[in-house]
Length: 453
Image 1 (cartoon, rainbow, N blue to C red):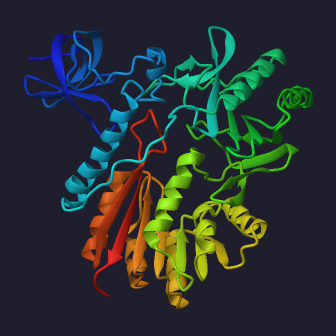
Image 2 (image 1 turned 90 degrees about the vertical axis):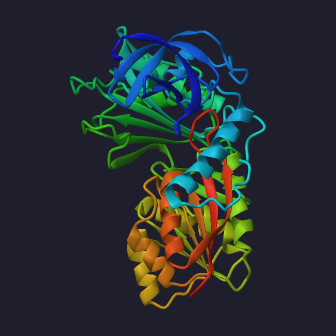
Image 3 (image 1 turned 60 degrees about the vertical axis):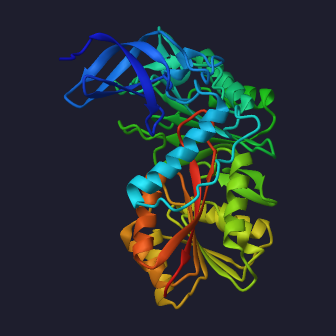
């Protein structure tokens, strides 16, 4: 019987939905990170029960022809780029298969053609936002990322998938924190000041926002720190402070303060200008987000007679992108500052037919239903947990011709599509889009059309 710390030889036969290699031995299915199908490895068992186990590579006996050897193994251990060891063309095939498998296994849909995943020509340095923890390592303040499934910080200077300028800003802040003797957060002792450095950079504008996440309001010599930072990076338009004195894993607390400039940066997407506030959701890969939203618009085949509901509207990126094609847009978002951004963004782009409310999507759609608003198209871009049953039933009660579902979690999307199909709608198109190269994550657009009233 297999037990912890046994070392055995296995062949990797598949990849799991989150990119781990799958091997089988003595009736047990093992998951092994940084492995690929066809590879034979010597594996140490980390954990095992009667059916499932986890292992780590002790040695590669053979390697896949699709292995990418260009990414640092230590970097892979953070989980930031959990598919970085797989050649990019194969990553795209993996993501297409992941969407197809989810639709079949969860929704029972086998008769839909899943289009090949849209990918990037240059799939590195794409992230326009970084969230970097600050901790003490070997007696020194460091920035980097946690080892996967741990709170042990690995110092990192090149994040590979982030905008290189963002990496430079993070390192500059790190060096200034060291210079001024500011103490990093200690999770165990619940002490120290600096928890996280968050940086946003506009893909087209180049505008930079720096957010210093601290455990308390006072930052020693903050004016001198900012002066030096701005001198090094003149494109910094906003320096914010967020106070997070809670013990959990959340990046942000509730309190934001402007330390320098304004409380937003501006960037463009699909020919519109957008103000982006510190806590607002904005897709981290601008180039592929434009392809994502343009595909959604193409799927909808909009006309000037259409009324569109934009649920989970964020700062209005989707709704304002379609507003010029339609009669009216009604958007709902639960984050107040994002709703304010949406309204300002509508003004910024001289759009008068987009209306935004701050509420839950479930409440807003019921209110609009009671007000007699009859959208012909509903666009949804929910968080990873997907839609609620209440929202789905209310949206069906509005009797739209089309529902455009933009998803960051194909499992919950498949679950929700199953309910839509039970309520008189049918999935007719699916397009995966790779917003997160080098990771197992995939965005997906689904066109769901009414087949009966």
